[in-house]
Amino acid sequence: MKIRVIDITEKEKLLESSDDVSLYPTLQEAQLAGECTFTSPLAVSLSLVREYGHIRLNGRVTVSVDLSCSRCLADFSKDLSSTFTIYYTQAAETSAEEDEVELGESDLVAAFYSGDEIDFSDEIAQQVLLELPYKPLCSEGCKGLCPVCGVDMNSVACSCNSTNKSLAFSPLQGFKVKN
Ligand SMILES: [Zn+2]
Ligand SMILES: [Zn+2]
Image 1 (cartoon, rainbow, N blue to C red):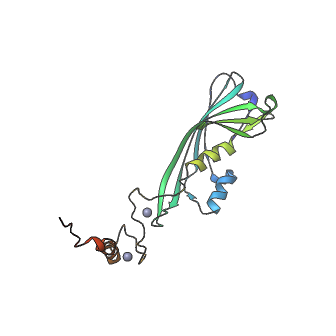
Image 2: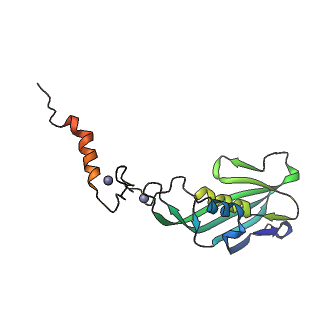
C-alpha cells in the first residue's frame, strides 16, 4: 500500500484496503517456510496525518491464519490483529543509519521515507509477523502428544499416561513417616 507524500496533510486521511497476501513478500516467505497459512486477505486500515516534523500513521491490520499446535501438532485457525503507530520522518532530515528505530514500546516504531511516495507494505507485514506466536498452542491447556505412544492426549486417554504417573510416584507410595 503506497501513498504520495503530498497527499498527506494536516487533515487526517483514512485508507482502507483488503490486500491479497501475495502483495507482501515477507508474509509469503513465512507461509512458504511453513510458519502459518494465511486464510483471508489482509484487512488494513490506516490513518495518516502530518504533524510537527513527521507523518503519523495509526494502523490496524487483521488476518486469519491456520497454525500448527506446537504440542499436539493439530492445525487450528486464529485471527491475528494488530494496532500500531509509526512515525515517518523524511530520510534526509536525519542522520540515523538504521532503517527503523524501536522507540521502547514495541508498537511504536520510527521509520524513514525518501522520495515522493511512502510504501507501508513492509511495516504492515512486520506487524503481522510480530503477531505470529513463536510456539502456537491450539489452546492454553493443550495436553499434547503422549511421549510414549504418540496419541493426541486431548482426545484419547491412553494407558501409558497413568503408567508414567504411577512410575513417577511409586517411590513415595507406601512411604510413611515414623514418629
Ligand atoms: Zn494442541
Ligand atoms: Zn500413550
